[in-house]
Length: 320
Image (cartoon, rainbow, N blue to C red; front, top):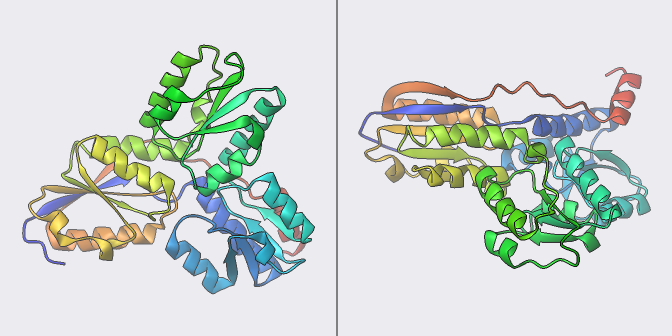
């Protein structure tokens, strides 16, 4: 990589790991210490190739279907959550379940259950095929309709317009989600709207900083996996606010042509991206550009999520 013109590097804070990701990774590592390898993980524990690779090297085995797991084994459910059908399949195989579902996703599952029991149609805003969406819609499949776009919101029909609620995937674009909810509220005046915190605090905070950053830089580099919903949304937010933006796994995937003639480059990272990937990128870009490093601060994050109580109890009993 070779760039001739001097440029500054603007680094977003907060960035990278959120409390739910920290918790999920800690759960897998603690399970490996308690039970020894292999510990099976249903789906990537979080959407980052390096994280998955590192845990695999420590003895975690990642599968997409619990039926691939030997009976009686330890299984960890990923941070994205699973449907009741997956839980039941795990129980039929007598698997020892450790649940690493992000508490914010669990909260949405509980809201979906409550609305379904009360006879509501639930309009769920999310992206088809994403594992969080599959898990959440599996909670009350007969009561839920997936809404992906404003066009979907304009055309969806429901049995009873007086009993409609909306829930959301936790890692969406805050602005686009708000626009979709506005359409639904116009069409269904009795709509039960989601709590503001249903889009996770980390998603909101990272997007807010990127909005500011996009007015200060020419290019925003978002470090994260292409499978990561919140990383993809960061790239989209940057583009919507005036910057060229690219989603890359690490600095080695950055095309030097992207940096030609820029005055400043912004760096952020999705909620499942390790900080070492960010620091490697900062070091490389400062060496290339020869400019200043500027940190752009947003909300201070001090949230921590407790590990599952059964896992903590087992760890204490084992003296860990």
